[in-house]
Image (cartoon, rainbow, N blue to C red; front, side, top):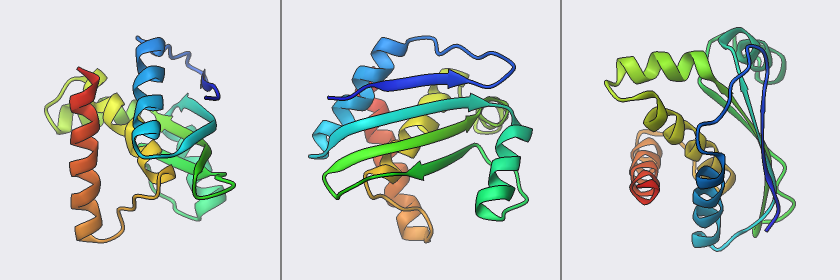
Length: 140
């Protein structure tokens, strides 16, 4: 299976458990019957991600994650996932959870998009949340 890379935009962010996270993500992809070609996470600030949101999606709002899907086929996963560390910290407070759990939720959320899960409708959002919860239970 191909690599998962982690980068950060300033200020510097370092993932606490990159090996465990990589294994967890790869297992999720494998469990869904797909193969990983490559996945890159870029951890950034609210403003950095907002600029990407404006430039590429024409949305002027803040968000916690943007996923760029480069999947060449239905069986292969490849993409870039941008995550606002600022927004994840804020969401952790809002949702009364700890930062590592919220970060994992957002990270796997991006992977689930690459796997074909959507969250546009109420039913899709519920299914996405259920899948996130199932994946988070595998982290422990």
